[in-house]
Image (cartoon, rainbow, N blue to C red):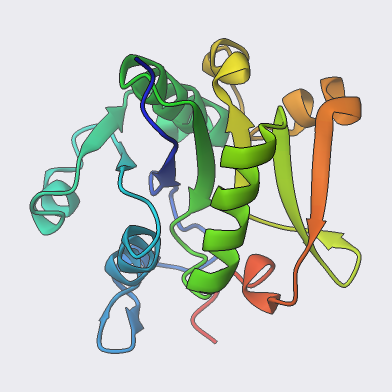
Length: 186
């Protein structure tokens, strides 16, 4: 029996623009990665964090949070997302929201709305939109997990979004957090 949906938190990037490991940037007194995870665990019963290969220090930080190591994460976000999609497929989730570790400001109410919409309406793709700009996290039905597993490079899921544009539901939200990421210390 397929499990309900969950959140894949992509945390395998190199933080090149940031100039250091931004996953440890303090947000409300805790590392940004934990702030993001805590926000998602408020809503989702299942979380999988995707880390770089050999990222043992961050794995230790996660305690009881399930994680996977993306072997080729250094080649781009597509590889990290492919690894996470494989983990969601193995876990038999009905859907997965792809979240970015450097976006800790998405409101829990927004996540609840997205998860509820994905659970009840079951679109192939669900994307939040704030002020006419698409944001994150993006929800994918398990029908697309095998496509996501084939991703490579640094474009994330753009090709899947383009191929499935007619099956994408865009949901207007009043939450600037769906667009706000931490790319630089300022």
